[in-house]
Image (cartoon, rainbow, N blue to C red):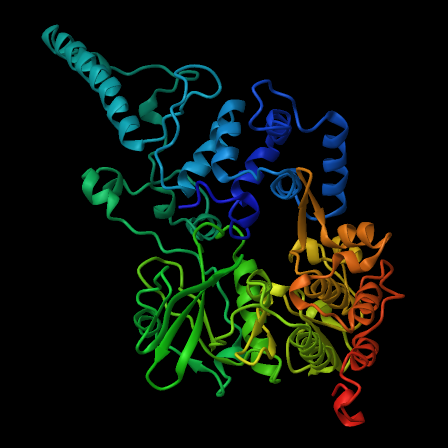
Length: 566
């Protein structure tokens, strides 16, 4: 399923087991040393050296990531040819790290790779039935030998018990017959003995259940062990009367069994319309609620090692969307938390379907005018202003136990793929899975988001609302240039901000998207982007200051009320 998927596009957490395995004995270094600089070259030349390995280690120490995770992030986003899961699988096999190779085979639902018969990598037998059979053979031979020995003893005759009836002198001149009987021997108080040893003397828990071990193999396979509780749904979600709790089978039906093929039929759109790190999004026509967008959390079994990651993401997105109602935010309709066949619940978030697709897709289609781009900047700024200025009561659970009476929101993943457009090109922010509530500044040990859009302080673990402003600055550059957040140039992949800064040294007009010609507000848009991308977040404008700048982009013919960003 994911064999030829790029590492950077794999679901979040899917490489967790592999990275943990590669941390053992520093095996990630073996993989890193085998990565070629040019995968197509006949002669191998390593992409990384020992100094870069030390850089990986230092970066891992400063974050909560393992060295392998840092390596996957760097390797997965560099070079002209991006590594896939199959690429990683081949390198791991080449390095002889079979435990990690077994994990990949499990992900791909393939047979584990063939191991050598001898040496450290040889397979260790763990089948208990084979152990029992071998044990039976060994003890069976012993019992046969003991039976033969016993038969020889019996044939030689019984011992003469008359010899045992004669008095035998023991200590002094007393015989054993003159010793006290057992009834007269004082063993101490029975009550005292009972009080010491009768409590917690039930040994049944220490006795193995041989009935299970001796069952037929087919019966043993049918035993199902209950899965641990992985997901905790927030009670505020379950008690929210404005949210509809959909039946999973109902959502399955309207999306054509979560079809990967998008079709616009007579009843409306159905099938897959998008994909992200945590879930795939499907469209479907509901008989009561119209066209819906159903985000189904995917691959729970692959990331069950990080159960809190899923529950936190699901709870954060549903809670935020339920509390944040604005014309520039995608409206939530409800959710589903039912189980299907597996032991993992099929979590779904149901929102209103936005027909105009994402900003990322519209920019790629080369069809946005300058006015439409300005409207998108204005609408997105309005949505962010509402989010950043929206206070949250302490009735809700917030992070780090901050005792302030109100908390503030951050979107956490502002990017062109998370800005949906209506038919009239009105922007609506979506995907609040990384949204947070905090007081002013939050230091987070985990770094999650889309790296090319992340601010410098966010990469260091510092989270403020200014991180959204930085991400918004990258989006503005995308609108200005028509380029993606990562630009390919001379077999290198560089960040859009660095690319624009280099080109603008001569003339910023060289970077303008010709599709939107003629430009009339290009200079104002470019200056706004530069302010949003200020490296020091303490000098970066807040959303209210950004909205004041955005008001200058509105046509001069509009009145003052229209120019003010509410």
